[in-house]
Structures are given as C-alpha cells and as structure tokens.
Image 1: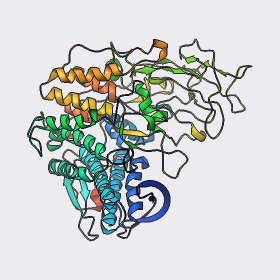
Image 2 (image 1 turned 120 degrees about the vertical axis):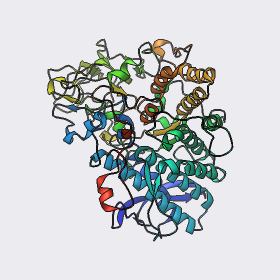
Image 3 (image 1 turned 90 degrees about the horizontal axis):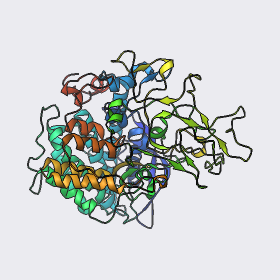
Image 4 (image 1 turned 30 degrees about the vertical axis):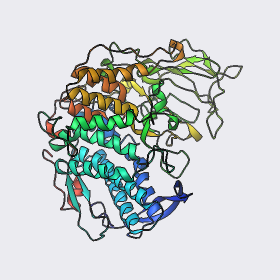
Amino acid sequence: MKSNFLNSIKIFLPFFALALIGCTNLDEKVIDEVLGSENADPEAALAAAYGQLGDGTFVDHGSVFALQEYSTDEAMLPTRGSDWGDGGKWRAMHEFTWDANSDVVKTTWNQLNLGITKSLTAIGSIDKSSINNKTLFLAEAKGLLAYYTYTTIDLFGQAPYRDPNNINAPIEVKKAETTIDALITEVEGLIPNLADIKTQNTHAGRFTKQAAYALLADMYLNRAVLKNKTASTFNFTEQAVNGGGTDMDKVIQYSNLLINGGLFSLESNYFHNFDINNDTSKEMIFTVVQKKNSNRNADNDLAYMSMERIQKPSPDNRGTNASCITPEFYYSWNGNFSDPRFHRYYQYDDGTWFKNDGTDLSVPSTSKVEGTGKPWFHFNRGLQVGQQYGPKILANGNFDLTADGRIKVYKLFTEKNTTLAADFTPELNFDNPAESVFTQAQINRGVRNFKFEFDPGYGNNGTSGMDVPLYRLGTIYMMRAEAYFRSGNVAAALADVNILRTSRTREALFNNAPGVAITSLDANTLYKESGYELYWEMYRRKAMIRFGKFDLPGTAKPASQPYRRIFPIPQATLDASKEFSQNPGY
C-alpha cells in the first residue's frame, strides 16, 4: 500500500518489529521495512503503527499538541526577543493567522497521515498472515487506525483511507460528519477481540478493551460537534449510534466500565501521572510509551519547552524559554491556588524542600542523572509564577557546590538578558496586543507550566522516559462529569468533579491536605474544572469548542469565525492530490 497523497515514491523508515516471546510478549527490535509494501512483516508493521504515536505526533510540542493547545488559553509560544521567531509560525497558532501553508499545520497533518498509513499497512499485512495472536493484533491495528482517524477528522474535518487489502485501491476521503458514526461502530465491534489491559502481556501502551472504552467515551462526547463543527449550538443528547440512549448516556456507560472496573484508581499525587516513572501510575489507560536512549524517538518537549534557559536540571541540560500560559488561564484558578493540581514542591531524600522563594541556600547533590552521574536539580511542578531560583553553572561546566558538596541555590536571571530577573509574571502585556512578541527586555513574562517532569537522562534534552498520557482515569471522570451535566444530572456531575478535587492531596509540607470540594456547579465552573484536571493534555481545544469558548477573543487572540474550529488541509496536499478539497474559510 503506497500513500500517494503524501509522496509518489516509497518511503524508507526504521520500523520496530514486535518480536513474539511466549506467544504474546511484544518486545522491540529494529528492522528496515518499506512503507507501503504489501509484503510488510505484520509484527513490524503493527509496531510501526504504534511507533508513530511517539514519533513526534503526540509528544512533540509542534504537532498535535500545538493545534490542540497553542490555539487555546492554556498555552502559547510567543516570540521572545531573538528566540522563537521562526517566521511567525508559532505565534500564528495563538493569533489565529494560520493558513494552508503553515508549517505547524502541515507537519501535524503529515504525521497523522503517516499514522493512518502505517495502521492500514499493519491491517493489510496482519490480515494476510497466519501469525499467532492474529485476531488480537488485527483488532489493535484497527483500534490504532480509528484513533489516528478520529484525531485527524477532529482537527482537519477529513482524513484519508484506502482499502488495506487492495494495494491498487483509490484513496478515499472520510469526512467528519459522516465518518464519526462509522468509527464508533467500528471500535464497538473490536471490543470482543481486544485484550483487557495487563492480560496477554498488554499494558497502557497497547490498544486494549479499556483504550477502546476511553476512545468511545471521547467520540460520543464530541459526536455532535464533529457532525457540524461550525454550528452555533450542538445537540449533545441526540440518539446514540448503537444500543439506544443518547450520546451522553454512552459517555457515561463507557466511563463506568473504566471507573468501576477495578483496574484503575486516582493518584493522590496528581503529578505522578506526569513523572518520568509514570508507567507506575494507577491512572494510565492509553499512553505513548517513551524510552530514552532507545531507537524509538522520545521527546522531552512537554517538560522543557516552558523552562527558562537558565533553569538547569543538570549541568548538561537546560530549558528553552518558550511556552507559557495566558493570564486568562492563570486567573481562572482564583480561589484555587491551593488546589493540589496547581503546584507541588519537591522534597529531596534528606527532607530538604525546594521552596523556590529565596529562602533556599542549598539542596543535596545526592540525586544523580542516569548515565552521567552528575547532580540532578529538581524544580517544582505545576504552574510556576514569580521569581525563580536554581543552580549556577561554573566555568568548568559543573554546578556551584558548597564546601560539603551541596548544590548552591541562586536567584536566577534570564540567559539571553543577564540583567533581567527570571520573574515569571502572569501578565504578558505585549507592546502590540494583537501580536505575541516580546522584546529582549520582556522575555521573562508568562507563567510557566512544569506539569511534566524534566528527564535529564544521559544529558540529552531531546529524549525522555516519561510516557505521554492519551487517556487516564482523571480524563474519564471529567468526561463523565460533563456527560452527567449535559444530561441534566448536575448532582452526579458535581460528585465526579469533587472526587477529582478531593482525591488529590498536597505534599507533606502541607500535611498531605486533600483538595477542597465545591458546593455548586454551572457550565462555567465545569469548564474551569476541566482545565484544572486536564491542562496541557491535548484536550483543551475540544473542550473550548463544546463550551462555546473557542471563538472568543483573548490575549493576543482576536474574536474568530467558526470556520477556525477546523484547520486547513495543507496546500501541498491539495496540489498533489485531487481527492481532497479545502475546508471552507481557507
């Protein structure tokens, strides 16, 4: 199967073979495979389809994350003096000036199309094979195809398809409004052939029954939007595709299977879901597995993009002083700054807390970076506001240490303007309110998000062992709360919101105090709670559209027309293929 709409030549890529050990234990080995070959090794082809999740698509800040987050109030990547200009491509995502030639739009489209192509290749090669676990692997490949396709029609309104068993079949274009129901029916039909998580050697990185339940809840929650994304209102309670009840009844049904199934539970330490060792989190339903120093591409973007360059977790690592949140999102936390999901202090093994408030003189250097053995400085987690503190690098390239070997803590100044304090201000105050551009004297502005733990492993900024959650139990509680609310059961929605709030606890510095329940719930409060639980998890754009917030003006963002809820098909694709047509408005 050859992807004519992407390239007219064969693409050679390193694929990951899934080697069978004990019939069902999938390990990785690297082979060379020809993308589009009808004779592709079925295990390698399936591994390639999984690998595309982490090959930039859902882990790099410039792909799905950019479209789902930089277009919202939760995240923006402004130009900071001499950094991050890049022809305005990052600003365009927040200023709503993207078009069919935008690099970020084209990159995301191509990566998702590769996911679809690799999934179709896997389906075709598995279907023709006689491998062990054929039924299971075929269901997983079809589940991945549904996930890539759903993401593509959500973002672009259309997605490519080709019969995986006919290499000469023409390209078909699946439109969101007619495809969403077929996708739901397809995934529901896969469930009997999928494994329960942690059976048949599966885990959160595989498409299991539980991943299918989560995807179905997501598709039903957004079904009304996908059927007419530019509408002024959405009918969230129309008849479900299959089995009776409404769309929201189905969200509740599939959420219940995950919440009540006994396989998952909420983490009291919210930030453990975003730690380097988050593969031990009890919330993970479907994730992108990352392995540093392996042949699979891993990425630290979700952690280091927000850090100032002078913030150095190790002598060999630094932040990049780019992404921040908007004042609107920061101040949406008013009255909730003590929520355990807003911020968490780090405690070293000897009991030292990093307060990041000027009272820290030093922290232990006993925490070591894997591979280099150099000291590891742990910054706090969550939203970081105000003056920042941390280690200083000496001329010899090492941290400045005390006489007894502890890491000295200094007031930090920005790396590109050494007289400007690294004081992260909630206000952005761009000189031109319509353009997210800072001068070199303003590069400290913007509250930063340290939700994801920085992985300094082997001194490489570009790799990380942190799995990226696509669906976790907190996501499911939030989806069920919204479904209850849209069904008129406000009491049940409030109960779910409060389960999330009170299950999370603060650190020992605050006696492990749980979050505080709220007493009432309306649409605006529910929308804010969605942001508290799911910020920077590639969820916000969909929520903003459902809640009627996406078109509103904000910081460096004008009021926009409904056509902007869908991104354009890249011009390069239109030039190369007659099958696609441009989305209205572009």
